[in-house]
Length: 148
Image (cartoon, rainbow, N blue to C red):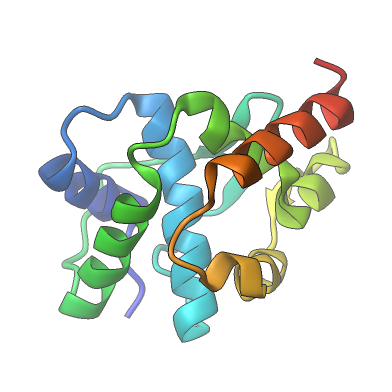
């Protein structure tokens, strides 16, 4: 059962009400990626677009109930990423092959579910959380990739 991005945002708000709108957009990327990698199905139907500032999901007012499995993946994602800095979250998004492939298409920067699934099925994504060294490496690679 596919949910809506709005339902996922509401679940994020219920668990971590301190997240900014920009962080929620980034967290949607991670929620969707881990759910796709773990189940082979999307968590929410709305597409994710690569943007120069990270990602964007058009979140509307539709809500669909979340089941325990979906809530579990959202909880896992928040446990893993919600305490990271904005810069580290952005670095992790922009270093992903899914974001890089989509960002090459100015006319349609949609992140394909297969790209996201492949990225999140890598062994490095299956460990408990990125280390500080990995986050620094991702940040350095992002700066080299984006020139800033």
